[in-house]
Image 1 (cartoon, rainbow, N blue to C red):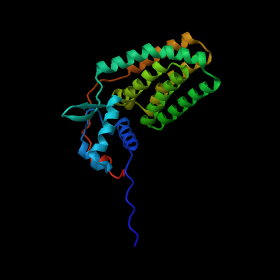
Image 2: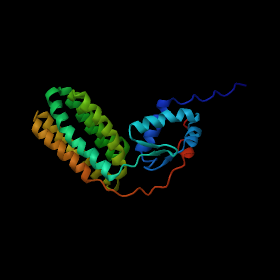
Image 3: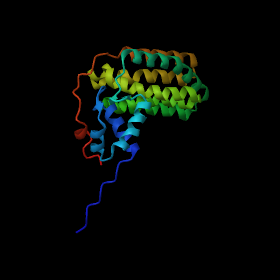
Image 4: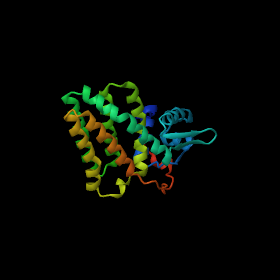
Length: 237
């Protein structure tokens, strides 16, 4: 009789990805305490394997680490949220102008695919994927803009924005059709200006888009009960 093959231990990257997915899916709401023992048991690893994963999330400001108190899912304040959008309005008009100066037709087609995929995800009610694709649209612009420093700053801000949107965006309370229209129309208008190589108009639409996105946030404390970590990650090894 053959023995059962032991489960392959999860890599740090796999644990990181599963935690990020749970956070962005809002299965781990802001303020949730991440108890090392429970995570270690859920993932079938030691506590020492959990710590660098939490440290990586803390470095990306998705998790908050407090000495002697442990880790919790970051809970962006209204002030922190305002700052994120303020900085994005400062750097993204410059990035879109640089994109226009450098982009090929293939780059513009890639932006269109991002919008099409985002719209499909919103219509399907998959807000996790839609928000990620929305972020990809902005990151594609930054990547082809050719400004490494601003691009690096935007990557960090995009990660924080995803958490902000899953926490405070009012699209969760609207119909799927309405959310799809509101979420993608402004990207299409921006892409039209980009295709015309109108840097001034594109920069204007970028600022307006980010301002409107911020205006749709609703700053109410999350009312979700803390999930059970063992149940949430059961069967992941």
